[in-house]
Length: 193
Length: 158
Image (cartoon, rainbow over all chains, first blue to last red; front, side, top):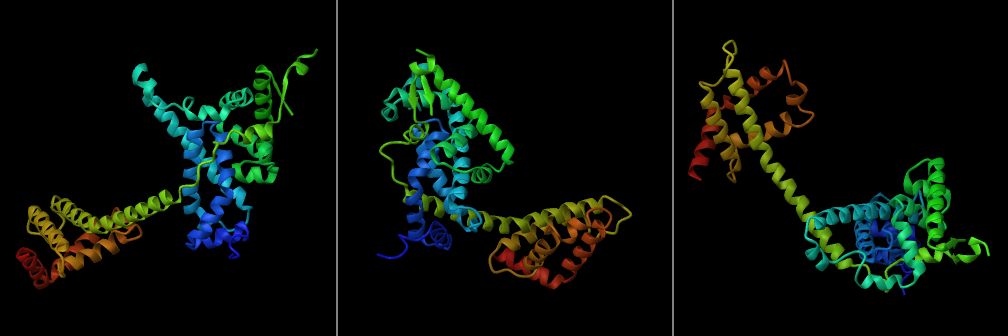
């Protein structure tokens, strides 16, 4: 077994930036599930859109790696890319929805929808459905903040780097996002820890 | 019983993680590399197109500037007539596009790369010095009639 498998993110990133496809694939595979989880939260649980955003983030990462100099954690660098990819995926979805809205209801019913189909099975439980509904009412950056803080346990320094905002702004946005999420979940009968 | 007690507890971190698609799809590296190759190809084509169109743009600028000079009687234009300037510039553009031609083609290319570059004299001297700049250039370009004629003759032969 070669030592690439056990190599650090920074080393894999450096090798991938110089064109080593295997290093890139190892690095991407290592982070792929986290990318998907982040994307899913950022797009409020739409599985199809989450996959689209994660795949787009993968492409952006491939292009952006030569710019990674290691002055921040690789995860911070990657989540910044994922955030932009998720925002763009949501914008594309909004454009598609505007287009669909111009079609008749009958035609629309035959088109794939973000809230129908196989992805329903991902949110079998009421808890998941309630969370998705609440996230859907938050702004994209609020969802990202909540996810990175709560699910990834990211510190304030890293959040500041991912969002490119002053610490005070990040703190106040996080506070407001949590308060909104708590209120909405309570309306559906859940209390968050 | 309080309202809090009647509510179910949610572990936010694990619920957020559970939103991810299941089963998790694999990253599509083949699509990624194909898209990157297509992007690189497009970039190269755009660059080629730019280098091909720049000299034509130079010819157009020359022709239009010559027209402007001719319309001012106090200015001594090296061209016999404005329509002659347009014809000559068009012929020069043709010769430039024809493979293997030198003469007017290389002179135009030189003009395009030096004079029309963003830091070149065309843009820096936009305004008062522009007319004299173009006049000087036209004198220089068409001064060597022999080379120019040879280029046009080769162009016609092709």
